[in-house]
Length: 599
Ligand SMILES: Nc1ncnc2c1ncn2[C@@H]1O[C@H](COP(=O)(O)OP(=O)(O)OP(=O)(O)O)[C@@H](O)[C@H]1O
Image (cartoon, rainbow, N blue to C red):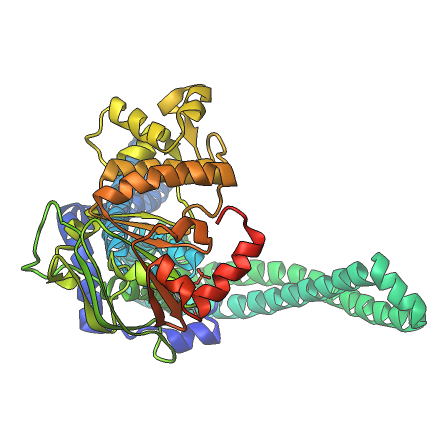
């Protein structure tokens, strides 16, 4: 017996069951319709098969025992036994089918959702909690499986069992069948009410026990005791404890009595149904000369018992339906979100770009409230380097995010090789851009796997060369399994600097037209920083480089430096030009000269 109720919130937020909504759910079932129809057929067969032995019981009593025909009794018993086995096999097959459909529908949905999430913009992932996204993927979609295997199939099976049992009862006696159908819900309602009342008491007792626990935690802790002693609150605490304790004791007693009372009520009510059937059946036989037999009455009483579970379940169907539709609704909400950054259908595909980059009056804002970049215009010639300098929050990383279209400009345009980046096929644009960021991300796999994502066709020699260029030769030699060493949570922990160098090696393998270093050397020690810089410089020769750094030693060699403040260009020029101009760069230079003798 279930006592679940919908919360007010669930009732308020329950999605409307429109025709579109239902057909969308059926669209997922459509590929499995033959399995589904077969499973429905088996549900009917199983319901019929499980009722027949009950009907045979009547024959065993009337024709076997009362009729004195032992052979017939054995035949009926054997037939019942055989039918029970067949019915069990049918229900195994039926549950296989519903598990098959449930698992496959949830597999299809999870693949659709995963593919869809992969299309979503960077903005989506930065503005949604990771836990929320994963819970839609995992919990909600696995919930679909149980909706299909349990809610859907159980609903069908309950309706069928109810229908078959009712028809069987009608076959015996219409009056008794109608009485049975009326008394079962009448039996269930008081049981539910009593069960709910008992459940409420259990919940209240649990809440009160939690409060007591909280009071103990607070008042018996070191700081709680100190507070009690210094403010002389011993008596108050004691009074509070006594009040809580008394409430808890009263609730526990009421809950125990209610529990016993509930079991008693169940016993009385479940036995009342058969008693009513015996009395009415007896009356019909004795006073109305009905053709009903003892066997018929026994069958009716057994069938009455078979009605309780399906009727109870059907009385809860609203709870199941609202929860299931809410589940589908949550999934559909996610699937209906439009990916904001996509390739146009006639997008330009280029295997290699030259790396000529132009920002034209670029404005950008993450949200409506606040503009982050204002009217940025600059040009970076192919193979040349640009360094972005400015205080924290000036918009440096934002600029670098616009280039591979992690975000799209709000107005203006960014051109690469003379074409607006929005016109390029997204993959071909991103394959031409290499990024080394502040937060280096290596996934849980081997060094080889982490490097190969940059260039799946690279040979081991290419990988070793790239690692060598990123100054990781000694590190590679120290690894127990070389390129096959697992890094990340499951394997070796790499230091910040090592991780960054692996990601630099990854970019070297990619050979991009445009290279973005976002404070790439920040987590390296000074010596490694110099070494890496030595490697960055030759890389910079072959591609357009955009660097974001705070240390002037890193950026002084850049051919062009842009000083940003609050999203606008304040100064622009070479290191030599900028140190001569009064302004932010000069101040930065003077401060760092004092601190860093290497500049
Ligand atoms: N995903 C985001 N959503 C909303 N606002 C953002 C987001 N990322 C950055 N911002 C805001 O945009 C502004 C510019 O940030 P950005 O990271 O580009 O600055 P930055 O110059 O790179 O700073 P730092 O040197 O500290 O990395 C900041 O005010 C920041 O709070």
